[in-house]
Length: 426
Image 1 (cartoon, rainbow, N blue to C red):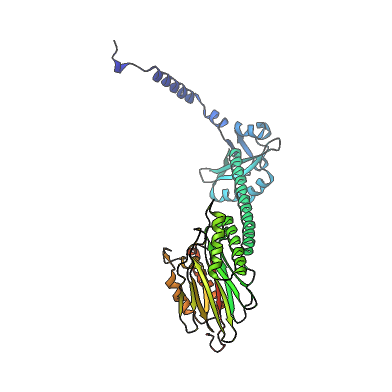
Image 2: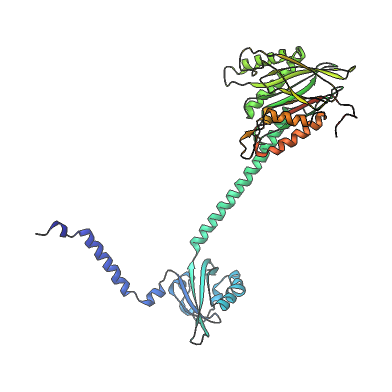
């Protein structure tokens, strides 16, 4: 009786028999058979290229018999026209200099004229004195590799074409968005007697619509109205709210130019329009300008709905925020209290309105700090006494300096009383 540990596994016995049979077949395989039926092409040529020996594998690829090749053809006769040219100008000279060359892509053509890509390696066999005797060459079928490379090339071209198409589509989208964005802003600011004005709009991304807005328009022959604000959100929905806000404020001002009344009307319209669905609201400053030709001063009445306070840049080189207390986001509640504020601009004074894209720009080495109100006040103080156009130009440069730290759209509106030419700073 055999012990359990000594019993043989029938599967192991079968594997051993298979291995033995394979090994026996390998021992019976002759060198001639290995040469003739190798998975690659072999040939030997004289130094002038005349074929002296060729294996059956290569003959099968060529579709030719041995008698038509050996002693009758040269290696170059197997190549395409381009292959012959490359062989004579590169392959053969390098082989003579180095004595061997490997992995060169050439094409041969068979008896039917079909081109076959090959990877060719050659080595010069030398005699006892170092004299060249013959050239041994190996050819590997590269048709599968060529097909793979062509597929990769097609995929790359398709990807490049898709990228070009995407860039073209993006450019068309940006053009359309720019046109739509410009339709939400005034083309030009109207001329205000006794005043100067300047505005600038900076989008954070050309691929999306912003929600910032501003406008200046006449109320009658002597008075003008202005507003600036920021709609919550981005994209087409924000653009729709921007359009509704602009035309609501314009219409409300024609009926009652009081800033508190205009914002109250806007609050009612936005809340009624969006209270049942996706809530939409905005921040806004609305005001009126009343120039006094006799004194050269301009009285400004305004009110704010949750918007950053306006800055007054004085001719004496100072700058202060104009308090607008009690402002609530416009449209977020059915009723909202808006408090009025008044200031007077003298010669050389400028009223600056802006959206929070300016003060919330990220600064610092790690882009982790916000620019902030006090930095803006310091910047404005440095430019106090300058014209509205000069102030907006300086702020435009400031926005440029933020680079990728500018995450939000920014609107700027500056309204000022011209300073006497002798007082305009350099």
